Image 1: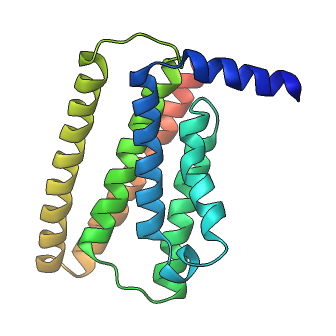
Image 2: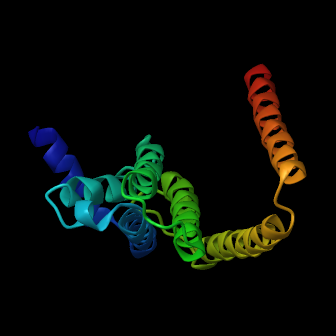
Image 3: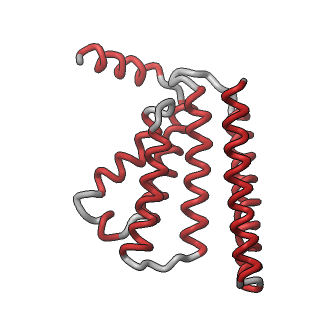
Length: 183
């Protein structure tokens, strides 16, 4: 135990600004996503500490499975809020959760490659964040357009097209997974 405390103390003393700010961004995105997804009753109860710890864990250890666990907890909170507490599904909440999850996941991927004491030019995370924000913007616009079309195209053909699209996405994922195993 003393060895771990010493290792943490050494890492904190050698930490540089940019990796620290990346980890702060990861924690902020996680906390925002959790607080938007989970019902207010949970966020103001004794469970809020566990929820916030799960949100900031990927910032502390970006190389582990913390980002996946945190994202799954956001989804669980969303399901509990919408299905269990009958909260309305609003476009703002959906876009906020999706944006925070994507930015947090992207920053976690970058932070996993940067040690605490890395000296990095500002353009590296800057360009990374610009690309991430471009993906978020395009996704938000496409989501709004798709929702507008879904209201106009509601019915059996739209349901069939949605199911075919989901099957295609699952098929592409399985194909990519199989190709990655071969490589």
